[in-house]
Length: 82
Image (cartoon, rainbow, N blue to C red; front, side, top):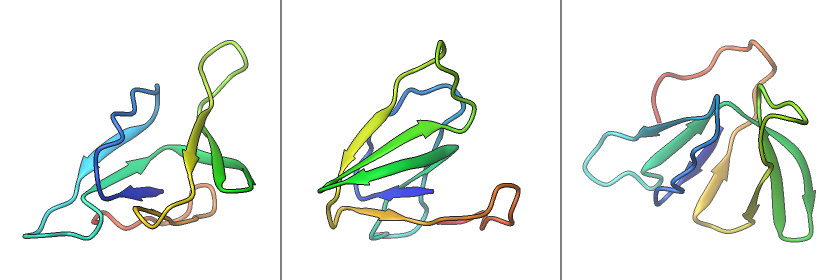
């Protein structure tokens, strides 16, 4: 999961953006459905969990304090909240 302090306006098939509840959450947005492919320098490269070579772009995000990453095993339990 990727958490961000601002909306990343991601429009990738299979990726879900959720607005985090609360008065002032540190990370206001949560993104489910991404797979981290690699980290290169100060960049992360993600694809949607249902990505195919013909079916979509990769997403490159900068490594910054405005993002938080959480890693879960495929099919593993995930928290329903931010």
